[in-house]
Length: 504
RNA sequence: GGCGCGGUACCCAAGUGGUAAGGGAGAGGUCUGCAAAACCUUUAUGCGACGGUUCGAUUCCGUCCCGCGCCUCCA
Image (cartoon, rainbow, N blue to C red):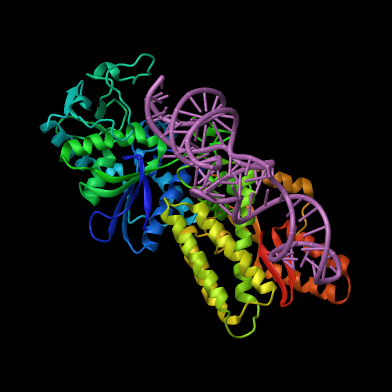
């Protein structure tokens, strides 16, 4: 069996096949760039990353388009508050988004497109909808007439016919013929950004950009559309209505939705104020790879409760995997090969692929690799491991990491590169109060330098000093050095082949 | 109220009509100058509750309870 995915449209897990040849065309809803994205947002983006990585792993060519919503009420409001032009304001958060993506090892989609770069495409779409009788004008704005689209509600299974008692209603309701109708084009308001169009100046409605850009780059019908589950209604429902009304063809074949990241049993969101940005967690000393691991470890169709305990657990889990890989690459083994090891590795690979085939069940894929780690370590401890067995083990780890992308410790290099950390050349011992003080300092907006890490050279120097102390039997001094390095985030391990160090 | 996602050990979390993966944490042991890493042993007669089907259910069916999300901007 091949890859199976849960399709919101059918409510079922379905066998996935591209519509045309070997290419998978994916449209993924990206962020609204009015502020830094929070890690709940990144849960969805990590899910999308795992999806594209696994499709590639399975031999498909992937064309992924991600939108950047750079015009809406919030971007306009915040840009005005900041005294910046809309485009300059949103650019800052687009830049931050790209840095965050790099820190989280998110592959770049083939295209990232801004809504405001596609106004003419949206205008054209509105004109088509008007011609086909799906749109009407009201007080300078244009609305989509839901009553004329018979399939409305097929994605969300929501029946909005008529007014429902108690339902909260849009502030613009009085302008609409029907509460279900949604805006395609908003009449310009004084002081707000506006674009000229044949039907008057204004700005596009939220849903329109996705329909226009998806169809422009992926065609009228494409393979996969995805986003967070909160987008099912109304966003994706309205995209379907607009697009299919305009073309008369199915829009996306598969609709994939990630469940939310929770905090204390509630959805993480800006409006509840219970959110953490990636930068918040980095400032507290957490590694992007641990965050990626945590957010990837629970299958996307289940809610995931975020806790710091969970983050610690993720960090420890990664260390176990990295230690295993380190051991296998550095330890000396007797020549030859043990056929049982190759067989075991093949088994693990199969289990991992079966897990991911099963609606991207990352937990299963994780279990597969951890079982291999246990068996591999045991084989090494029991002297059953041979030199030539390394290759097949490493191959499985590499394959696994093509999807999970956490084995390589790139955290510090990336934090340095993006200015979140700076190198410290002296292992000075700070007093406890000073350290606490340092931790409380908020990260500067650009993230510059609130984290300090020891240089490799300084670490090596300390290790040399410590080993001299050990040789002379001065274990008090030796332990003191080890302890001080640990406080600086560096773990020392004395092995047969010498002292190994790694950053915690 | 409608639609949807969940309820599995101390925490996180898979899974199956045939008797509970994996990670973290804890306990004991091996190794180590001591650690760390790793290994060995150990931690759910139990999978929200109650009925039903079945030789057998955590897994299927029914009813119910609980948490959360969407129905309004939202990943």
